Image (cartoon, rainbow, N blue to C red; front, side, top):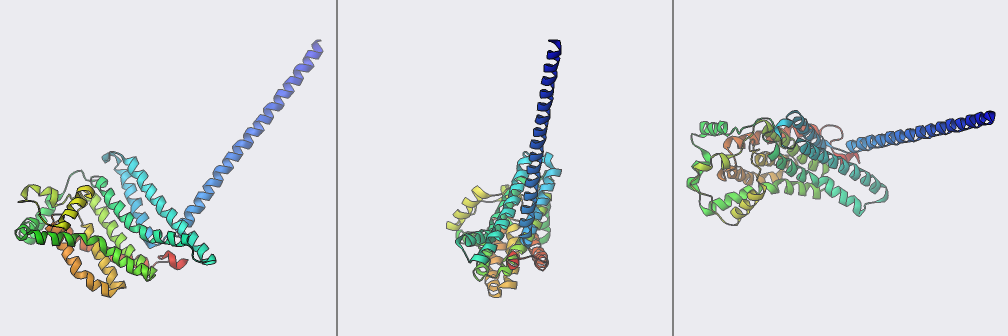
Length: 352
């Protein structure tokens, strides 16, 4: 009996050992399978990101470069923000959307070359070309959260003094003597024309399928805006509308354009990011784009842009120094953008 029990015990022990070895083997197989899947996903993600980056042009290099810089600043000065991780996540999401859009459009366009134009190709081409306008709006609205990222206080006193040194008066207050409802409404109309410059110029170039011209003007604007956004983060200015509010003799009364701009300012105003004037920077960059790519449109735009620049001071949105700085950054955007457009792969449509 003892001998039989020992044999049974040894048999049971062998079975348990076998089961343990089988279990360990299966566990190792599962672990290896999971690791293989992870590696496969990592390879796939790397490949897709590389393909999306290859589909990007000069505009995306500027846009993604700005997001990288602002994300780095959020990381360095996170203690000055209420929700730094939320802002960082939003920027990562914006970069991901840009890469996905570029990658998908390139893939659809390649298929369209082989099988002919499709509705899908037109859809993706439209959004690939017009999303920059939404990106500019996103960045400007985000500045409202970043104006005190580096510097805690407003720096308006410096620009008030600079304006007085340049002109001998406080320009926005001095202009009040010329205010009438009709003039106010005209100036507010001129201020609103800012939103049309890049849309009209881009629309003409898009309609003519001048892809190099189209992406050139977008890149000029992106470079000019990016410079201005970075300056605004380090040098926060809230604008005469806020800093000199006690000095006004009354609100600017006008007609429908005044009503429209008051509505827009009430719900879409960004407090801060006034220096340099992004309105002026974007307008000047578009003006340079018209000069280079559609000369006839440049001569149409010059008087309108001039009135728009005056309206930014008339409407109490900017200091004169904001306007001058906007002209400089818009011109720098044109110069930098021109160089970028001469680099390889600047226009994705040409590669396709």
